[in-house]
Image (cartoon, rainbow, N blue to C red):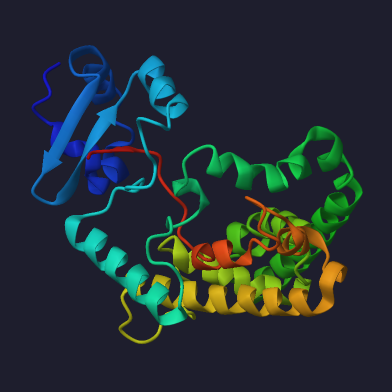
Length: 276
């Protein structure tokens, strides 16, 4: 297979209609495993498709860096996001040269941040949450059953995702972070907006999804900054990971918060290998 239709690599419409381009990826690995990808609509990047090469890139931060770009956006989106983040950093007094979020950091700095919470995800520690998660699952299922019965009597369908499936994973995250259940609906709504799937009742009239994502980012940042300030005032009494991060040290700094604040509410990253 020739690489004549390589432009489909970043064509989201193609993915939506045809699924993953397996044959194209096979052709890249066979014909151009380290490929310089450049189109008029996207910022160029290196497409690295062989497993051994990806491992090499991942294991040599002294040569390859995550700090440039990890997400595939159009040129216009990329420019808008970068300028928006820089303006936000300047407005809040943060260092605009800091990486966008932790996943943009290179080792050993990335490893130092990751180790602060990695022990919370060991099999032994996760096992301590079993009873609480089973309790929440039962509560969500009971609520879903009651909602489905009510909707059925009203002659309308029930959305499985919003009424049940999305609640448990969010509850796990929020419980581990020590965030109160009353705040979970807002956090879920902001998260949906951040990934471009804003709920209809969150969008302002005529609001573009990217503007909704930016607004959700600010709301989430303000929320966590409030928690940070409360945590500073309470000292060691803050539960969950938020409290742990407030009290932790990285590079001999007493508090991580001056480093973490610029990264609160960032959109999740896609793994790509960017160009120079």
